[in-house]
Image (cartoon, rainbow, N blue to C red; front, side, top):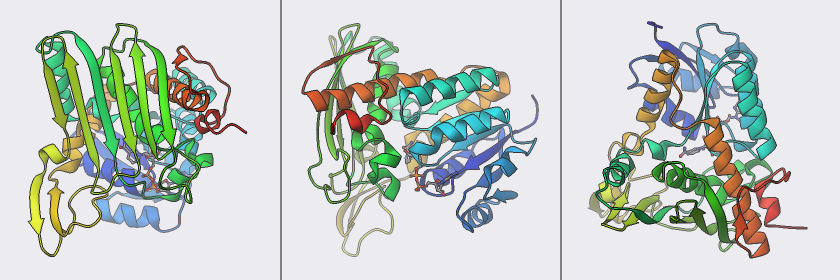
Length: 360
Ligand SMILES: NC(=O)c1ccc[n+]([C@@H]2O[C@H](COP(=O)([O-])OP(=O)(O)OC[C@H]3O[C@@H](n4cnc5c(N)ncnc54)[C@H](O)[C@@H]3O)[C@@H](O)[C@H]2O)c1
């Protein structure tokens, strides 16, 4: 394939803006269309990013022959249906995290993409975040010895859109929304060794009026090679997004802080126009990010997938990885529901993770 890879974006709000910004620096890609169901949104988005086509109906976008791949930036409960429709139309698929709502959906998505001979990438940008890529390289070269304890956490004061708070559309709270990042991060760092158990503690501590989902969670994973991993996730942490990781090894230790550790420490009496995702009030001291999208690895992630499509290679993070993450998420909610450590493999026909925690 010599031509540019034609891209169709599904969604036009928060993450799709990041996708569009990120794709600007992917030389082999061209965004040919954007689709969003709300009247006017796709048109405005197309105007802003100079995209030649915009649609409110997905099938119209999928009918465009020049589109090779789609990037799904729609709410969780739509991921499965949108993937199935894109695969049936012969488009390669990048789907945002979490992969989908349940394990049966995950199986259908993986199967549909296989049958249609299209690639499915599970969009976990932490596997492309430059600081975390370097962290993994330290581990891989042996500088830290044998890994013993991995930690990762993402924290902010809660999502920006209704569907995240509604467990019927999201499937769960912060464990589903941000725990998914930590779980795939640990699997990637640990050479995709199998997870053998999950223990989790969850609460709805601040946002009970807004959601039935968990807004704070601690998740402990055990891996087959003896590594223990601890994820801390919060929707109640003020002062902007936090994303940090730690590796404790037999020969060393490393700490990586993606946002505060890379930011400009700023004092402003009047406040900063934009400091970092979900910064809140910025008068006084704040952590002002630069190149936030690059520091998170989004252009690198989409560049990778475009090259996979172009050269027919396997994505670094697949639908199967997304399914493994979802299995651990279900196990985490089961653990929080029962108070017990849950062994993996974990099978469940629950349609949404939160239901294993909030039992009737
Ligand atoms: N990787 C990350 O760090 C990250 C960050 C934020 C969101 N996300 C994920 O991205 C997805 C979208 O989140 P968001 O923050 O952009 O939400 P958002 O509410 O800002 O945007 C959602 C978009 O989905 C569109 N949409 C709604 N129904 C649709 C349909 N039937 N078909 C096509 N599009 C439809 C909406 O019009 C809107 O444009 C979620 O799954 C979320 O978990 C990932």
